[in-house]
Structure formats: C-alpha cells, structure tokens
Length: 125
Image 1: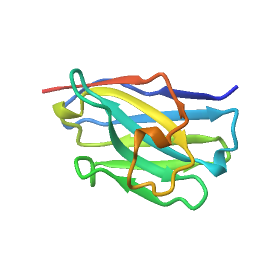
Image 2: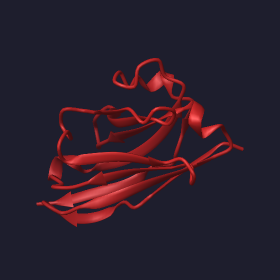
Image 3: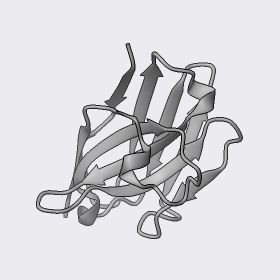
Image 4: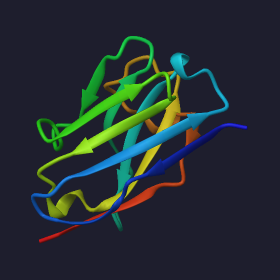
C-alpha cells in the first residue's frame, strides 16, 4: 500500500520556522520526485518545492526561494521541507506528493500519482 504521511505543521509567528516531514512507503522511492504543494483557503493548490530522489536536484517556487529548503533522506524514504522566515501568506495546508515527473520545475499536479493527507501550517502576524 502506498502511503505518504506528512507531519510537522503547526502554528508559528511570522519570522519563525517549521520543518515538515513526508514519510513515504509502498513504492520505489528512488524512482520518484517528491514535491511539496500548498493550498490556502479559496485558492488553487500550488507547487512549492520539489526534489528528485534519484539525483537530488531541487526546485523552488519564487515565493519561497531563499526561505525554504527541501532535502531527502533516501535511507529513511523521507523528504523534509525546512521553512524559515515564515510569512502570514505561507499559511496553507501543505501536501507532499510523489510522481515520475519529466521536469521537477513544472510541478504539474497531474504528474503526481500519490498524495499525502496534508498538514496545516498557520503563520500569525
């Protein structure tokens, strides 16, 4: 059974930090890119960051570049998203997803086969 389980969300003040984790199981981790997406109330789901499990290449949306860092521990089949200098506009439900994507920078939702249940991140001003 394929599972992606996110953890690490919570409430934090603006300027603070959180680290999200995405634990994967049930598929060949090295064959997939793992992406982090987020969805704020009333908005479409958007790609935040992605990492290729095979070569470690990464992508960041402009809105988080320089503040968020994605990393992967292939021995644990886990991807992390370190979020620093958080802003109220980062408030959203954050999802991790796995897909055999052609280009990690495109972050097209339909390219991702497996999704986690999401974890809430709330940044207060």
